[in-house]
Length: 439
Image 1 (cartoon, rainbow, N blue to C red):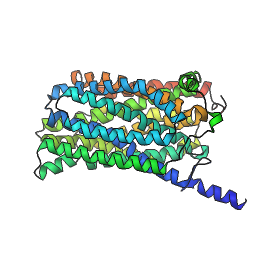
Image 2 (cartoon, rainbow, N blue to C red):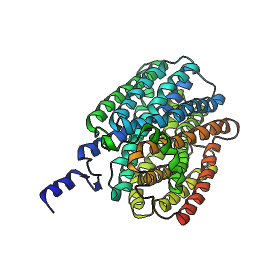
Image 3 (cartoon, rainbow, N blue to C red):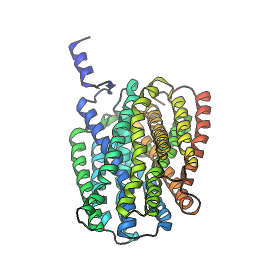
Image 4 (cartoon, one colour):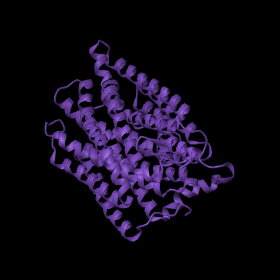
């Protein structure tokens, strides 16, 4: 091997992960650090919102499930309209600029959210949040598909899952605990919530600057190779004619729906159980956040174990295994009556393992199947499917949470997992080979 080839190999490897040609170590490490913050900063809105509904706006407990699901429903209607334009922007403008701008939009969201004095003001702020979600989630998915060599795709997806899980734990457990800390130091409840959100906004600004500095600039194609905007607009949906891509879209539907149900209703379930037990709002939110953190710690511990499996198996077969794990984790909650019971930890561990499994399985499959030239647009359609999952799962889940049982949203997720498990087996048998790169 020549010296130049050896140097090229060294520059495109970080630890055990091989990176795609043209992706340097700086780009890879920057992406992992930015991934650490991406999902955590997006999910923090569920923790902050639960606190605001209880401490700032004093919404009755019997209405909080519906209010929370309505806010998410409104957000996902917007993201459905915005994910495809964001995907096109990724392909035409570049990943770095769009991804970094998303963190600035998150910063603006968290600067304004604790200033709301009514539910209507929360809806207005959710418009900014929707713009942030499509750019951050789209950037995360697209860069995750761009950066690995094919032999390391599952490992990089797992590494992103690990870093993202750590970020979720830090943002939820660390920064979610700040209101209680500030109240204990003499701040009133509203001021404590505002200061916490302002700190999170400052972190988002710092991450935006870091992402713009360290990610690879430009787009992964030469100017003459760029697809037209019209081609990009239709490519994401026309690629669904391939059963393996359609299955990946379905996995995004349930993975994002599962993620949203966990973030919204797991925290809310624990919070309301804490309030019923006589805890103050800040302490009750902490009790709800803790069970969510348990599930996320389980997820991040499981991610490195799952990554090698994704690289060794056909990725549709691996997705079938992931669907089975998620179905088991969600449906097992039928056996748990009190989320704060000492034996509940096992259930939340299973829930976290199932959630991260479907997320990583779907990301690995779409990353393999999406052609490079239309990758941003296909990932845009992939995220549209995820937005639909959030839209339907939270809309249905919020009403079931209030009117039937707090466990009902998780049962719905588990049932959909079983349907997609069967679909994965069917696709694996009928369409066993990956799509050619020029399809």
